Structures are given as structure tokens and as C-alpha cells.
Image (cartoon, rainbow, N blue to C red):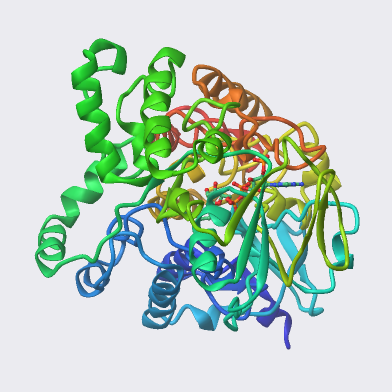
Length: 541
Ligand code: N01
């Protein structure tokens, strides 16, 4: 291989939704792009999270690319909330349609990315021994990719089958006649448990924290619905880009405390019917005012009690430790009703914690549970985990992990001071997981592509966030979060699920639409807050 073969305009790390689009977009700019992906295929999150019941909680018609109008018109989503299998089929189709696989080395994990100041290039090294250099390094590494497997005593001694929902095997897992234990009741556990319970002999759910979950209200999409969506896609996307969360849904014009109880209940009924996590968006003050949030909480608690036959079990399934919605609210199908089945047992770890995992199962301080299969639905080292597992070094050998030891620091979630020509897609400091991740990825990649165009047309070699801009953006993110109820929950948004991780509210919570405006203004002001070729951009550049 010649040097020319190993030197690119850009390296894209990851072949999920954002990486695929980055490859497409940069190639359209005439750039030489190389991609690395640790999995065997494209899809990122949707490649790995194949556990039973895995679905997206954003409607399929919104959780899809908007950049290719023909694709948007041709593709037919079958259900309101698509299964993992359907989303992966879609991403495979997009990759084939635009020949995106040819940019990638698959089964190749990036181990380090090091910036060479003299050469003005990134050297990207992988676990297969392949190394490339590139002017730009694009981290499309995903925010919910690095799995979190808690260090429970005896964890690796279990003699049965062990799985993590985020690293599910490709072959179907047979639960028939099996005693299955599930640790964790976040989105993954709550989606998987009802499906497993239909097949398994017994299911034991080890719940440390109960979670709020709203029925999805999933349904087949009829031809009429699809025709109407497709006829109005442009407007749907426009509204999504202006919205708080990247979908065309906006809350009631008045706050929950500004309407009377009958009106409030009517609105909650309506949003309950819409289904899933959208319920948190019924009223504009719901995630800001505890009083308003309490009205939503009381509404949902009553629903849970209606669904669960045994009031004692219902009590244990109702969260008491966080305002509703401050942890990602789960979108489920038949979750609470699953506890009415004879073959499902709820173990409340707050009352009787796990003491160890043994060869035969799980032991709490009250009982031992013999199992054939143990599933860790224990989530992810979210937002920073996939970056901290790569040795990333910027100017003067500065290590990203050291720079972020007190929590992630970015400018706009896109760039880090000291790391020239590196961009992160949907990372900490951007709306990221609080928005529709497909439109989020498109917005970031489009912004980066415009930025690269600006650099080329002004003969600028490097772009780098300034320290002041990053400091101000981190402060802005903290201020925005502090104005909401979100920081009051021990959520993965704050890194609270990983022992020792600094507690910083990682996504930008000021809304997707506002964020889009901020990014556009930064670009229009000549990339305000960035140093171009080492010089801070002057407004109007
Ligand atoms: O992970 P989680 P997830 N002992 O971190 C428990 C997206 N997603 O994979 O809350 C016992 O939410 C932990 O308990 P606690 C979505 O954004 C989306 O379910 O820390 N239990 C918790 O119950 C979601 O929010 C979709 O007390 C332990 C669970 O494990 C995000 O991914 C589907 C434990 C982890 O829940 C993550 O969801 C799936 C221990 N030592 C995922 N350690 C959809 O689109 C952890 N737990 C629908």
C-alpha cells in the first residue's frame, strides 16, 4: 500500500447513522474518505442491540434520513415504532444505495487517534494493525455503544448463558423451558422482559430502580397514513428542525398549572394515547416545575396501578426517586401487565440487594435464584464511553480522557479545544439523545460539511474550538440543565450509572431548534468561537 492509499481527507470512525451520512456527504464534496467500524456490518446501535423486543421509541417516519428525497418517498415503514430488524434493514439499504460500505474497513476497531501538529494530520490506528492518516477526524462513535456491565461479585462465574442487551448475538436465543434472570429495568430490560416472559418457563426481574414507562401505542402504518406523511414530508421535517426534540410535536400552549384539572387530564389522556416518551412533552412546564411534573407523575401512577393486578407489586414498580421524565422515559409494549403472569417474579434490589452471582444463578441477601440464562440489561457508559475507549491525543499530546477527567468539555458538542480538525457527531454538549438522532446526525454532518467548504474556500488548513468558547458552552449547558428537573435524577444523562464517572449533565437541553439556530449563527459569524489556522475567528470573517 502506498502512502497515498493511507492518507485521506477524512477518517470517519463508526458506521452507524451518523458515520454513514458523513461518508455520503463528504464524498459528495469530492473528499477522499475512509471509515472504520468495529462490527461486521453497518448500523451502529442498531447492529448490536438485537435483544428481543428492541424497537425505536421515535416514530419510524421521523427516525429516518431526510437527505435523500427519493429514499424518503420510496421506503415503506411498516410500523409506527420500527423494530431493530426493520431499522437495520433500512440502514443496510441506505449503505447499498449509496455504496457507503466501500469506504469502510469492518471488524476493525480504532484504538488511537493522534494529531501531528507539524504535518497537520491525524494518525488513526486500529486493532488490525492498519493505520491511516487524514486531515480531518470525525468521531461518529455513537452515544449508547460502550456497554456497562456492573462489577457484581462473582459476575463471571455463572455457568449458564450470559448476555448483555447491547451486545446481543446474531443467532436467536431460545428461552423455551428456561429460567431467565434479567438485571436492569431501563429501556432495554423493559422492552425485552415481556417478550422473554411469553417464551420462558420463568423470568426473574432484578430491579434496582423502578422506571416510568408509557405504552407505545404501536400499530401498523396504513397506506393512507403513509401517503399523507409522504405528501407532507418537507413540512414535517421543517417543523422537526424547529422543535425541541427533532420531531413535529409541540406541547400544549399553556402550562400544566395554568389549566384546570379537567383540561389537564384531557391533555394527559391525549398524550398517553400518542404513546411512549412523548408523554413528557404534554405541557411546556412539565420538566421544569416540580408541581407540574407531579401532576404527570400522579396520572401515570394511577395508570400503572390499573395495569398491575397485585397492589403490592404495583407499589414496587412505581418510581419514588425521580421526577417523571428526568430519566429517559421508556416506551413499552405490555411491560407492567407482564407482572400479572405467574411465571414472572419481581425482585426488589432496594429491599434485598444482590450479594453475588454464583455458578447457578443470582443470590440476594434474602434468597438464591437458580437460572439457565442471565441477561444484563444494565445499559451503557453513555455519551463519553465510546470516545474514552480510544486513545485520542490532540495538540502537544493532550489526551482527551485527561481533558475530560472532570466531565466532557466541548464547544457546541462538535469540537474540543486542543484537538484541531476533529469533530464529534451527536456527542456531549449537543442535544444528542434528547433529540431525534437521525436529524441530529444530519444537522451535525451538514454543519461540518459547510465548515469544511468555508475552510477550503478561504485557504484555511485547521479549525479548532477556543478554550474560552468551550468554557462558555459548558457553562451554558450547565445553566440550561440547572433550569430543569433533569439533574435531580441519577440518570445516565449525568453519568450517574457508571461508578466513578464525573456527574455532569452531558446533553445540551436547550432544544434542538434553538441549537440549530446557535450553530447557524456561529457559522454565519465566520465560525465564532473557533480558531482558524490558530487565529480566533473575527466576526464577519
Ligand atoms: O440502560 P439504562 P438501557 N445492579 O441505563 C440497572 C436507549 N434505548 O440499556 O437505574 C442492578 O437505562 C439500572 O438500575 P439503576 C434509551 O435512551 C432506547 O435500558 O441504575 N441493576 C437500570 O435499571 C435508554 O435510556 C431504546 O438503579 C443495575 C438498568 O440496569 C438508553 O438507551 C431501547 C446495576 C440500566 O438501564 C439506555 O437504556 C433501549 C447493578 N449493578 C435503549 N447496574 C428505545 O428506543 C445497572 N443496573 C426504546
